[in-house]
Structure formats: C-alpha cells, structure tokens
Length: 248
Image: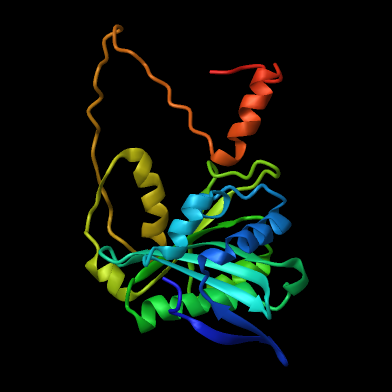
C-alpha cells in the first residue's frame, strides 16, 4: 500500500530526489521509464502487464519505491516479501540514463532493506538476481551493502545480448540459525546448494533418488504454450501472415 515511505534522498551535493510509493495514476509513467531504458525488452509482469502492475502497487506484500525529481519519475525498485517465511526479494531496479553515476539505485535498495528488515522486521533474508554484464561497480556496491554472491545461473539469459545472472543474498545471522538442517535434495539441486554451503559454511544435504514413474505409450502428452499479453497480438499477426516457420 502506498504511504509507507515519503521522504527525500540526497544523491549528490544539493541534489535530491523524493522517495515515495506508487499509486495507480503512476502506471503509465512507470511503464514509460522502463520502456525508455530497456526499449520494450523488459518482460517482468509487474512492469509489462497492467493488471499485475496494479496488483503490485496495491498488494501490501509489495514494497515499491519510486524516485521523483519534481514531477518526473527517474528511478524505481521493487521489493516483495513473504512474511511467514521472513524472506524477501528485490528486483526491477532502473534509473533514467540522465541520472546515472550517483549510486541512486544502491541508495534506494539500502533504504528498502532498512525499512523491511530493521524498521518493520518483515524478513531476515532478501535475495536478487543481477546481470553479470552489469558494471563491476554495481556488483561491488551490492557487496558493500552486505549481499553475498551465491552462484551464476546460465539458464537465465537475456535475449538481445547473451548474458547470465548471478544470485545475491543479504541475510541476518538469525536466518541461518532458523533454517532446516540437512535438507533433502535431488542430485541436481544439490549442485546449486553446494555453492551456498561452501560460502556460508553449511552442512551437507541428504541426497534422495526420486521415483520415476513409467508411463504407458497410451498416455497423452500435452503441451502448454504460455505467452505474455504484450506479444500475443504480434504472435497471431505473424502466424496468420505466414511469417512463423513453426507453430504449435
């Protein structure tokens, strides 16, 4: 819900932004900012889908910070929390090109962490994924905030430019004390767990072998094709125009 944060952020000498949460009337300007920066290639539903964006603006489990220079929106970052698990996520950070070079996004992320963890005690762990092609200074700044690198995920790629994403986690020591010890994992998941275990000095996992069901040849295989609303019109237009080589 809007109204949990409403304050100034000094990002340079004698230069300030006003931090606040969005309202429904900000939706067009928010989409315009992300479009201006990413040229329409940003696909997270909180940004690309109007219904999901409105949900995020009004859902109390989301904490969305906007940076305003007067009436102009120049930066944005989202947090979402699961209070019952004391876990949160930060994502969708963006800064207008004219305002870069002042660590605005890092300062906004820190403000969000302080609010969720120190002031409201809503979570003990916050994670995010960051493009490995992001400037090294940004990775360094996140490290200075207390984020720990826990691996690279090569299956997460950006289409227009080949790149991977790294997992970063900020956590309280209490989070490690409360966690379930010796998790039961399949071999493939354990390879990811070992990265975190090595970095955080965790115990080994218990490896289990999943039971594989044998299917009869008569069983039917169903394929589910999902596509975002933002490309659905283009999809049908290309298909009906015979421009798609394959369609299923």
